[in-house]
Amino acid sequence: MAQIRHRLDVVCLEHGLRPPSRASLYSTLSRIPGHAYQVSLLPPHVRAALYNLSDDAEVPGHQLVFYCVNYGSFAVVSYAASLPWLDLYQASHLRGWRPRSRGLLHAAMRVRGIR
Image (cartoon, rainbow, N blue to C red; front, side, top):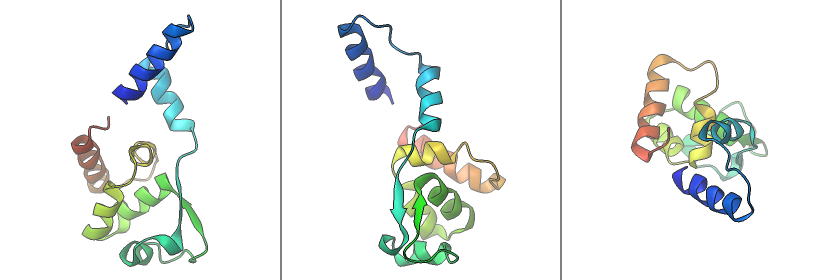
């Protein structure tokens, strides 16, 4: 996030624009479309956690993180923790987290430097 903010500041200043605030950037990150994953391309242990989805389905990244961390085994949680930071950030703003699962997500985010 610091790199994105720095690059955006440089571009804005080059064009004589006022750079957006940090709060504006984080607000935008919550709304932009994230990654999507084809279920058939996910590892077998992750597909098992998504038992109710067919192999031809596509799942948004933030939903994948949510279900993996809330309902998956340790291997599935580890997989979710390795997904792109935008998926983890957007997942952290979803409702319905179990308290311990939310703690796991926040721990993974903290280790990776995601706020």
